[in-house]
Amino acid sequence: MGRKVHPVGFRLKAFRDWNTRWFAEGQQYTELLHEDFAIRELIMKEMPRAGIAHLEIERAAPNQVMVVIHTARPGIVIGRKGASVKELRAKLRALTDKAVKLEVEEIDNPEANAQLIAENVASQMERRISHSRAMKRAIQQAMRQKGVEGIRIEVGGRLGGSEMARKEKLWDGRVPRNTLRADLQYGFAEAHTTFGRIGVKVWIYQGEILPQKSEATDVYVSE
Image 1: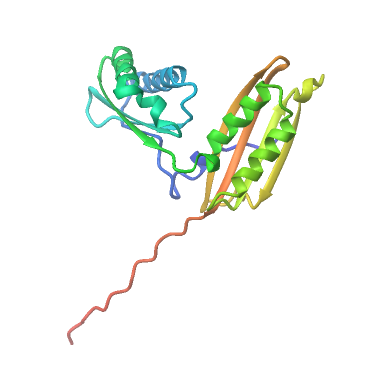
Image 2 (image 1 turned 60 degrees about the horizontal axis):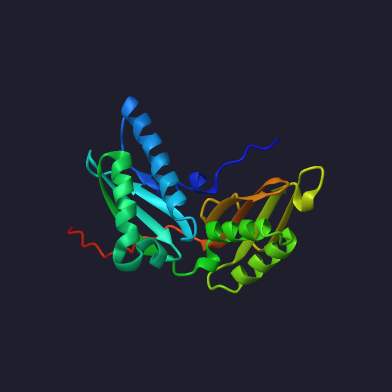
């Protein structure tokens, strides 16, 4: 059985950065890690239809937390006159007992975002739409977007209500999952159907990120 490595963690040393940025040691590390999980769970629970792709958490000061929400629907997160974001900030302050700063960034192209595509396919399967139809539609829409060179979708579980769980996959274009310099997005979602949970994995390939070469400058050396 092969060992599976997360596509984001696999490329951290190459060109990716952590979604959570802070430093702690010992017991403090454990407490802050569980606090991060609680923050993410609260935001996803309060904003289930906001189209949130991912969250970034940064701790520059001991009693301060900055959360950046990347969403396809910033209007839902902000609310009328900022009411929703103020309510969310108050709940995060009560949860963490710290000063919380919230920033909302809009995703320019949600149809080419792996996490949003996975959630879209999962929601269609929950509405009893055929998994193969949902996968094909998502692949066609993603390949029309600028910058997308390949997409791969895998679903696993009791597909179509079958007795035995199985996996099915569809792809289009190139998806080099083992290439470190590949700009690869990854998304995962679960569809809660009447037959059980069905997992949806999405990879999107957006070309290669090559290291920038430093320009050579003329240097004068005296004799």
